[in-house]
Image (cartoon, rainbow, N blue to C red; front, side, top):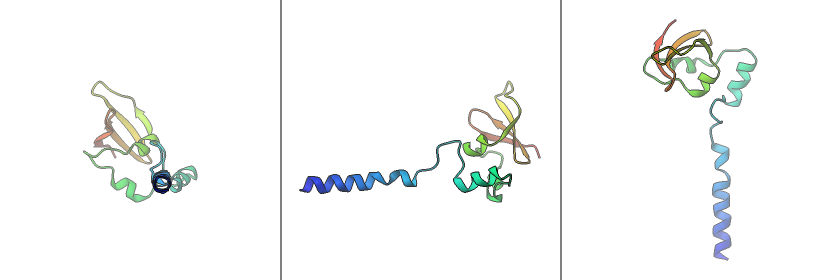
Length: 99
């Protein structure tokens, strides 16, 4: 009887973990994805995260457009909405804000 209760508790505890998980990398949350699909801009809070020395989030990078491919230093220039960024491609660290 105790074993049944313990197993049931474990199933209930671990069965709900997926509900709180982040979307797979490269995907925006449902509400933000809907905004992008409708052609609207991402919220201003996303633009505040675009600072030199910070890393660009993978989901934002997945929705960016490559302007200049990787150079000999491993840098890449991408367009995120209306902003151009120079990144270290391997780490997505922002090296320079170009506009």
